Image (cartoon, rainbow, N blue to C red):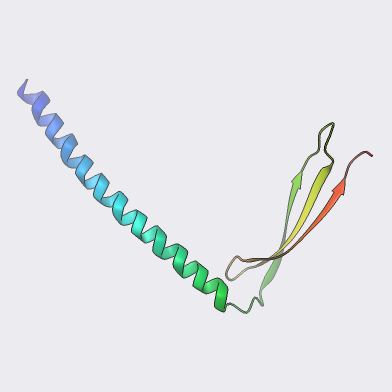
Length: 88
């Protein structure tokens, strides 16, 4: 029985450490988002790349083809062109 109590106390201690790390992680995540938003505001978007997303259609909806221009430095989406295709 003593072994079970000792094992449980170790688990409780690890749980406390885990919860503390989660709180730190949440604070860090908020700081990362804030810094990323500031970066997107001050970036001049000179290094661009093109990305694409495709959504297939079904019986009632036609397919959608998204052409997206993004900044490689900050990741901000600058332009999105949507074309529709499929049978119809």
